[in-house]
Image (tube, rainbow, N blue to C red; front, side, top):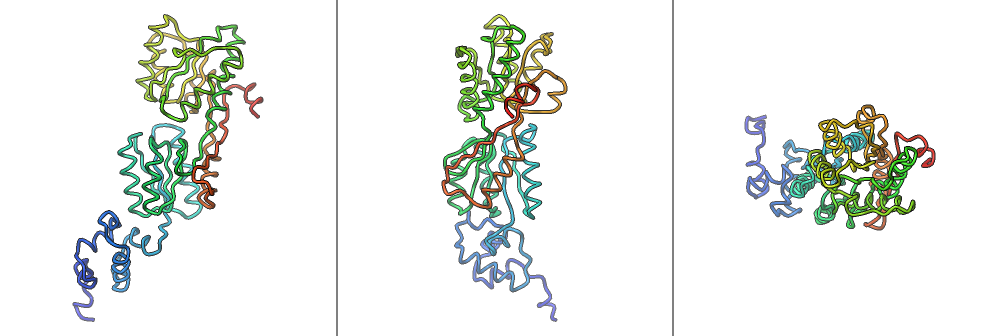
Length: 345
């Protein structure tokens, strides 16, 4: 073998063989050819040349050649939350069991970060893109549709792709019932229950508020606008919102429906700083964390059924539903209130 024959092939050699430019060859091999508006026909020709000539192609190039990457992508809003980290862990475990590689990207509830993460995953030709808690899941579904990639929504629903979510309204009804039962047992004022945390424009928050209202209405209790404080999910915002509520009302609520463990952190912080005993206030949280439950044994929590949600998600990956707007709700489990748990079961 001559030195010329044994020399390692470069993208310049491939460009010459393909009668194309080195930048075009590079874009095809690194998977960004679509963004460069390079034709699929040319991209395939370059890949075929690369394979024939023994050029080592990367995972993206192999994915384009086979039209199957063996990769699933997931957009996740947060890592520092038990619920979302559990979703990522169970999702990756199930994918690994099936011999599938996953890419998970945290987007911090930022629409721009969500779109950028989606663009990068589409460049890798993921077989499915899972939008978990996305701020605009329909926008991501449209991006996926344009690229010929299937998408699914998890946690927050959309209208352009199938969605697997928690049964937020019914779960909120059950949590509110548990809070009201505790208040009645204490002979406390059942009218003074505060819903705090979440975003008013967020589907899950809206559904939980509706469940909160319905449970109260069934007991003849009206819900005033001041009984609901949607202050976002951040701990510091929940802390400031509770301080403002107490300043306005002149007293603490008798019970609180807290709309995430992140918000719960801010609530407990404010109570501790003010010298209040957290055990004096009946609290329920639509979320679950074992440490929170351990530090506040009277806390009632709704544990979202992540294993079942992920199982149903993979069912739809295997056999997509006919209706792209299909929605499946999974009932969460109430934890910390044995009597209510028996009713739910």
